[in-house]
Length: 218
Image 1 (cartoon, rainbow, N blue to C red):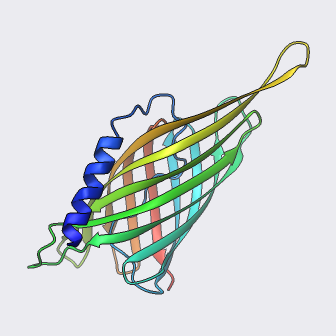
Image 2 (cartoon, rainbow, N blue to C red):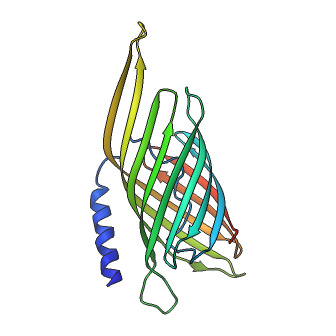
């Protein structure tokens, strides 16, 4: 039953992702996690950097809300050409539908969830709310480490507000709400039980490379 539900969600997100990413503001955080859940009451902290259309430096805290549900809060600094650096905040969660085990029936790990981000530049603000499907596949390596390729598709509503000031000092605003999609593809290398390294490509309007590290604290 869970496999049928997972297939339905994947099909829905793939069809919804036929929209355009062009003109999108895009995520400042990237993905920087896999579909495998942390487990109840387990937690980790992490840092990341996005070398994309706008540069971001972020931190996050992940926590296992149940055996198959994780939540994450995120905070960062975003710097874009021609504007002052600003703070970006975000949150997301995921529920693991498929759980890969050697000899089991699930072919990979698969999770679904929701996301939200907000930032406010000098003359523009953006809020993004949507959902995502995240899949990954753990590969055991010699030495006890694990390499997990992963991919995420997200579909989100981007609401932006831009402020314009003409030569006479008159202030005007332009608000837009559009449905956008994004794709992230990367790999996580768990170099120990507590430490994981991430690297990924993002295509969602804020196109570029994201790198990160996480460390288990709970």
